[in-house]
Length: 287
Ligand code: C2E
Ligand code: MG
Ligand code: MG
Ligand code: MG
Image (cartoon, rainbow, N blue to C red; front, side, top):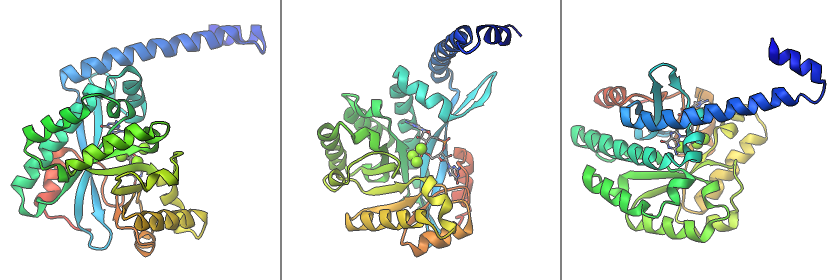
């Protein structure tokens, strides 16, 4: 075809091919931005809920809220594709606020509906841009008030990138969130560049071990040492640990032996629609 022909003609330079690729990416990006804006207006987003499980008791302690997008023509689009675009365009701010609102009101419904759900929590991912938003705290206050949810049942997940290079500001926002009894987690822990000397001065409650460390622990190897080190670190700082990407019974067994409190992953459940999560609670499901 034409592009191949040019590439061959131009030899190693490949100027035209590179150029047209860049053009395609720019067009895609603009389309994605328009589509994201429309998706929010047209109600194409849904929040799914993945159970977080107590590894000793096998009971569900809460859910992580995970955004899903069903595009009318393209079908399901992965967060890995659209979250970065939403961040870059700033659309993550209104979209993220919508996720918070949905999550708090779903959890509040479950708490009211089922006695055994009274202490469940919901964990919501907060992007760097959202965290930097000036009226984040007011927005959260409004959402808690409107949903009737007590702040102690809300957990916010931030990544190390939110803290790095922004330590003093981040610390002050985290402290104000703690004043509302909101719980704070560091997501994908171990993959970023946060400094351990900072960690103990932040009011963080939970470290979530990234799934890249969890997957290989069924063999005796370095990753097991890393998981052990994170668990030890967390406990010495009075934090709890959630392992992400728990996929097998062997993972569960190993994580339990390493002293990890909670697990989340396909072994227990994929992220569920709100309806399926309600069914799970109605059945008082245990693992
Ligand atoms: P995350 O917060 O680390 O979420 C965990 C991801 O791991 C989810 O991917 C989940 O579906 C996936 N996962 C859970 N268990 C397993 C398992 O056993 N094996 C494997 N291979 N994967 C598992 P998902 O839903 O595609 O989300 C990807 C990322 O997109 C999230 O990573 C988070 O960073 C971001 N994201 C999702 N929803 C939101 C949102 O509402 N706001 C923001 N700011 N980011 C979001
Ligand atoms: Mg998360
Ligand atoms: Mg994660
Ligand atoms: Mg992640």
